[in-house]
Image (tube, rainbow, N blue to C red; front, side, top):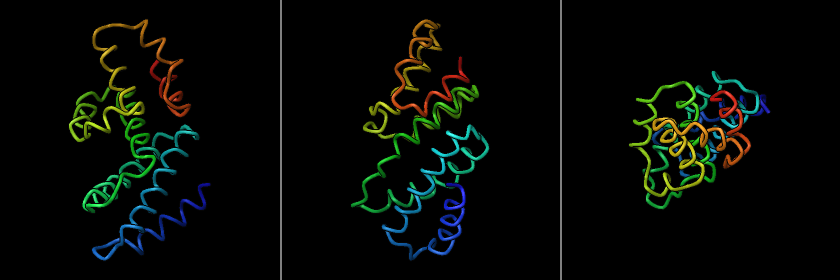
Length: 149
């Protein structure tokens, strides 16, 4: 768990830089994504924010490779970040993050869920917000839903 993640973060310092390969960047991003998910399980919002801020440069680096697909968990992590911003009522940051999404990312269930939830909150459809708790795209969203409600 956390010990392995710490070792991976130390390793990431060694492989980062202009000569980093696509494979090493992908591995580092995957490790940090797992850190984000682990912090949600631990209900540790500080670690969540830390891992997410460390992850964003790796996403940017991966986007510079023409043949680089997004990591398998990218949309899941982006959706969790949107949930975090929504729960903390940081709506300007929420909308800034929306601007950075591609259309494909925004249409995934992981990302479209917090977008729909925010719209329901803005128009006052609180019954729909309450019902959304039973239709989360992944159990990890439950932590944020519990804090929202």
